[in-house]
Length: 102
Length: 407
Image 1 (cartoon, each protein chain N blue to C red):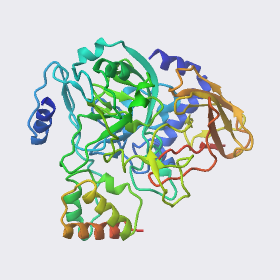
Image 2 (image 1 turned 30 degrees about the vertical axis):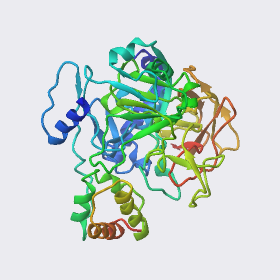
Image 3 (image 1 turned 90 degrees about the vertical axis):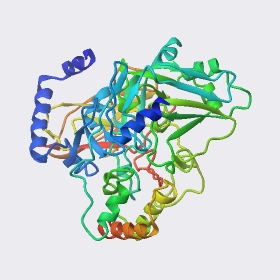
Image 4 (image 1 turned 180 degrees about the horizontal axis):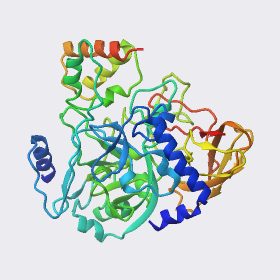
């Protein structure tokens, strides 16, 4: 109950009251220097990917061909339930294979 | 604190000056804040960042946060709380906990389900043990061929004194009923979308009931846990990879069937082969959940790229650990593994702990010197000259080395 309430407040960006028995931290934002390379489809990739995770997750991966990135995007949708349309998924896959290809 | 001072005193004045010189040299060479990053391609370009209750750590990912401990902290047995690595799986993560309201729910196939406050938890007999917490994917960035996943260097590990309540004591108080199979552990982290699998891990009932060393820890190195390391309590499964050490623990559920949700299957699996490995680039025929840690050892000081002088002895320092049998010996080699010389082991803090080691080494000729380190545990398990490989990038335990420039 308290957990659900606490997370809701965090999600809404509302200040969480700090009482004596509270332990609270404030996480820094995503690192400003970690950004996706420019290129066709970058806005689509940016918008979809960052709804669940920072772009470091993309930047650190080994470079890969279309097959690798198609598998990654498919995993995000099928396994992690990312709400990405088929059209956006194709755009993101093409973008990643172009900018982070072998 | 006392321990740290004692450690410093063991350094000779010359060694201290050498160390100070190295710091200056590496700072100049890098022109940036990521200490040692120039010498390690896996860490190249990774900024140092400071998160709440943490000192400067190497950023792997910001959200969910994954932060790596710089290698220099592994010149001692105990990793400070503020330097301890951070790894979360789903976002959002808990950032605020009211300890008066927090409860650890013990539920499922039990005689007496419990809802434990922190005071309740502290009423059980208090136990402490020192144990290594290492991410399954530690050093994944060094796999060749490379594999997808968090591209960690070697800093997704740490060693701490964990204090808390035996899990067996809690389960006995709740009365596990006949027919219980698995116990699932869930924390306060919850994914942003309901479709994202929540991070829940499981251990089987015989595993738990036969291991009094599994604890629900509410203290880490004598202090409360940092939020990012699992405040107010986390599971401690000594000898096993950190994936089981569920943080910000909130629910323990006893089940009558095998728990095989995402983070148990297909997540965190290793090939069902004796080495947990397959031929590089190939897929395993079948897999099992990852479990006990492999033997590892590291040279933390001096770091790779340091300068040394012919004829001047220097002190090598580092740690070794395994999956819970304890380290029997650590050896170093300066001739590519042809011959090995025993290092001196530090105090024995228990079979689950980092074991400190030191060795004195004197450079004999100018050029690059490669110093290798290898450990053997109490049951004779050791480290290989060639790295093992599996598609998830787990279990890495190849013999490690540092390269020094002898002038």
